[in-house]
Length: 147
Picture 1 (tube, rainbow, N blue to C red):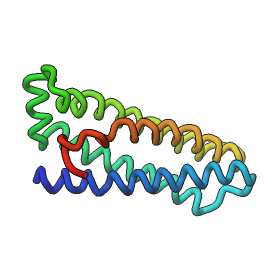
Picture 2: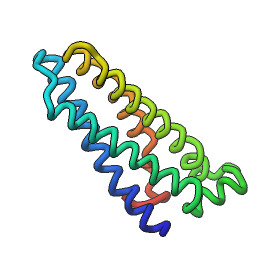
Picture 3: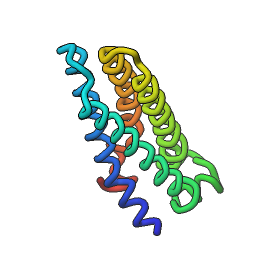
Picture 4: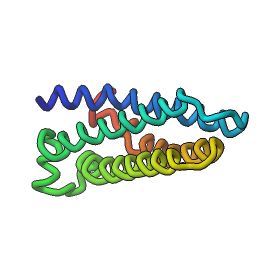
């Protein structure tokens, strides 16, 4: 079960990144061209939020119950181990903050009065979330897990 959830978590990472990137590009483009907020913009925002929330659920299952790495972290703490420290603290905190930013950004954009305000809210909040996601992924730690 652990390997299945880990594979899903790794595959879903790419859906999160690509959907967030698409949504950010569309929002910035919408801001500069001053076009109307369309159904495709709304769909991009909703898909991004959905993928991020699904990734959170799978990540929490790995973090709390399935991962032998996290079981060791919960039992012993990081103890100077870079992998345990990063995954147990930095990865978890960064991703949780990113989920919060995406959720808040989507919520305030949905309620914005004008199309430009919607684009602006999505661009700001999703950029913050996207940066947090990119920083919290163990890109340059191949000894943790392969891509």
